[in-house]
Image (cartoon, rainbow over all chains, first blue to last red):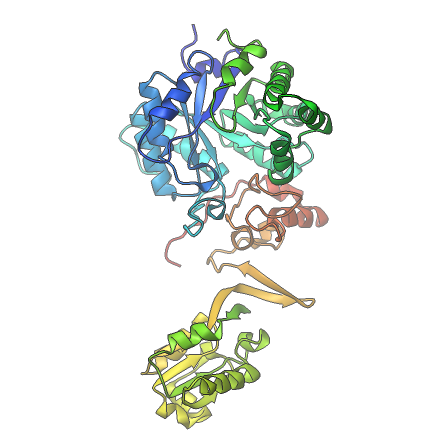
Length: 292
Length: 204
């Protein structure tokens, strides 16, 4: 019997993680209701940290609310808003509250969000942030002071999937060297490209969970191709969405086919729908993954 | 070179709203090169201030506003400064501060100070250095990510660049692409595998 995300990561089980967002405000019943649909079908839920630099409730607080509801959260933390003191302090607090999984990333620049004038911190980068977590795990803080109770985090990081971007692959390698337990990737549409990425990084021996954003419209696909780094929706998929009588259904169908391919290539999938998880149970069912 | 840009005249007039009998000080180094505080700009500023009803008691153009030795040195340039009830410095923040440290009247600046940069091959180069006090630029092939990456990332790029352009400003090159190309050119891609510790921000 597998209990938690870390144990599942070390097993041969194909993993399903899904992204949920804290509310913009103090009312949390609606996002908790949305997350409830993922009970029993997702192994863990990534909780975003002020995604796109748009101010929301903290990922720490919402992770705790999810934990209390019986979910297993993966608290995301970015380097954007806190210096090394703030990051460590939040990590100690999260661990004390029962949060065991984290996913660390640089974070979008403040200018892309709703508080564009706020000070960008980036005291650490994502590689240094992983080193920091491993220090807390060993019972000392980043400055070398002994902690009265350390942490034991299952810590992940993120990566793009373009095998041609050597410099991104080198950074990924550094993340793994600095202790990343798992990697969650940018959304995959081009399975061939993902396969090449997996080949290029096979020496790293780190569990890779492939990102997935179900398409909803042609406009969405075009927007992502143009504006989101590392996303490449192939022409063939664009045509399928364009010709479909119901693009949302077609998007789910495409995503489920992608998942079936990814089962052979990755350790899991990470579902990041735009909007709610209304269609996620159906997607996983289409992909044959609804039976836990 | 310190990169400055001239504030709009309306903003300068608003700063000078309650001031009169103004003495204007330019800077014959960086600001002169950037045309934000050389002799032609100083003369133009004097003219426009008078056009807007201000009395300009005089002007001076020290070699560098940031290296003014003393009040007497300014008097030697133009003794009219003794009549000044306000000084407008057309230099960078450092020049304004230096002038303020040797004078007894309100000191205001006509420029915004943007970065430590340079110019080469007819192009203005902004944000070349952040004066962090602990230079490691050689490890990045001579291009500083602390200065040129908006996130100051030391271990490689964020995931945001598209076609080699920066996520934060799509008109700028991602410095990590430039660093990669440069290290490739000098056959030092091995440097990219170094795990760099964070910048220490203690007292310099």
